[in-house]
Image 1 (cartoon, one colour):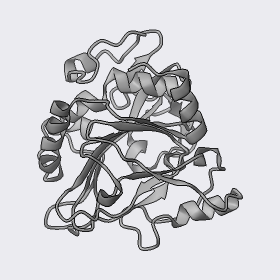
Image 2: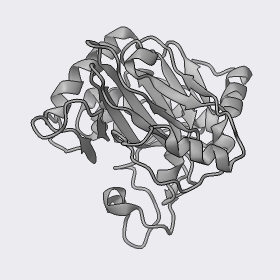
Image 3: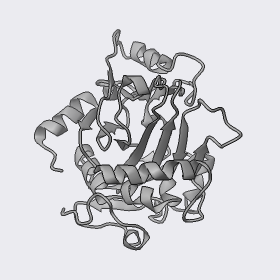
Amino acid sequence: MQLTDQDIQHYQTDGFLIVDQFIDLDLVERLRDRIQPLFHGDFETGVYPDEWYWRPGLSLPDVTREICNAWKCDRTVASVALSAEVGRLSALLAGWPGARIGQDSLWYKPPGGGKEIALHQDGAYIDYLAPAEMVTCWIALDDVSVDIGTLQYVRGSHRWPLLAVEGEFHAPQKDYRWAMAETARAAGVSHPEIVSVTIPAGGCAFHHGLTWHGSGKNLSPTQPRRSLGIHTLSSAACFSEIPAGYIYGRYRQVNSTQMDESFFPILWTRDGYRSPHLANYCEDAIAPYVLA
């Protein structure tokens, strides 16, 4: 995929860019096949994910399910989440020298009323990084529309101030748009424009780390909404002086701000570097060879 000047302008203006075809349907099917086993604890590599929301027999059936850093557990997910092509496109959109993975998010929104995900900004969760910048590649694993709880963006909201607005994330009790509306008012925006993504399985959307986004309920009685989000950082990113918290703080080295490539591998750089160990860990299912 080659980004045009118009693509980059759309991203900079709207805070997101839609790509109707990104991965082929065979790869989509392979990723779908891994979702249920992963949520039931079948981890191919023997490594647990960093975050695992929803457990069989313990969690409510209508909660939207999420696993973070499934790439550490499963090589099929890794073959996409660690693709050089994801890194290349993210870096070009952001103007970075290269891109590394911050985390992935594997999603399953169940049919029959699967719960909302509150509108939020990814940038609100990464103040422990410098630069605190992120680009997300969200890949649809089903044909997505409003009816099945597709991803929703607030156009241009990446230009609003980043404000600390408390709110629930999974299965919010308030209106899932509440925190966004509060921030819009503070930014002087009276009528924020919410854009519901409509793309086929295998399409994707790239969005800025400050773009407000989330999703409504899955109203389909039979069709789940499955997706894979890949959150990338600049290849030059490091830890800041702000504590990283109990999950990602475990990966900070003593007396160092460097981000270890074992846990935050570099996917692509303009000068051709990619973390060497990735070649032995998994295939690159999107672009085995990506030129600078």
